Amino acid sequence: DIQMTQSPSSLSASVGDRVTISCRASQGISNSLAWFQQKPGTAPKLLLFAASRLEDGVPSRFSGSGSGTDYTLTISSLQPEDFATYFCQQYYDRTPLTFGGGTKVEI
Amino acid sequence: QVNLVQSGAEVKKPGASVRVSCKASGYMFTSYGITWVRQAPGQGLEWLGRISGYNGNTNYAQRFQGRISMTTDTATSTAYLDLRTLTFDDTAIYYCARIGLTTTDYWGQGTLVTVSS
Image (cartoon, rainbow over all chains, first blue to last red; front, top):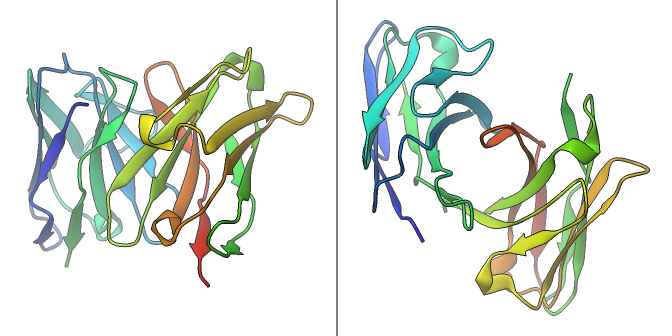
């Protein structure tokens, strides 16, 4: 199985801050990486796929980058509605899909 | 719009079985698969398996082989997860998610399954 290591596990930030979250795969995943946002009690929401492609309707302050084993989610200017937990998912090997441990973004 | 609505919370005793349903709407059910994922308290997300909406073919995570089943009812656009011989470690929120063109694009709201004596 492909292991996904996400960091940090939590961070504190203020509105307007630039936030960066990292995800490292245990082997190359050829940009087959997605990022999700999850707020308490709600379903995860797909933000980006193919490492850097924004899902329809997702604000452009979210961006993704990376290649090989290392990937990054950046929020360019944190908004109040962005306080949530973010997690990565690799789908290079779909059996099984594997996920990062999550990053909780707090005020 | 695509929507996945899951069944309500369940409380089960150890050794029992549970069925979680996931009713899809807003798209052609048979054109997409459904994957099931769970999240135990304080833990990360764990993939349980997937089922084709087209032909019902399944792939299960190895550690659940023998006590997990996934089925679909195309007439009602509903997917089902059955998990048997429950233990305390099966306490988790169970999610269904549509398998889109690349990966899981729409998720259900989650179903809390609590295993308690």
